[in-house]
Length: 129
Image (cartoon, rainbow, N blue to C red):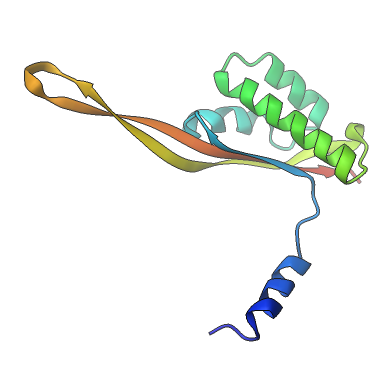
């Protein structure tokens, strides 16, 4: 069992909250594998070069991730008062979301399943020291 009262546990959990600026996108209609190709290209880069990479990347996921990165930059600027020139991408990852299951009719009355995958994208920024 946990030690302390429920409210005390919640207070302690909220006290050490992450203050780094971030942006999250839930239920993006991209598979995790396809999103990770783009996220691996920008991980650890400063935001200006990451935006340049995303602008010229031909994959569909890059347009979605570019919009998310711009949102994270705006969060850093407005909520945390950080300078956008000093920001870099500290973490970026894609987690598995729900899967839409669809049926594809096949020959002789059979049906094949089509899985339309989704993912939850997260970008966490930080300032260079």
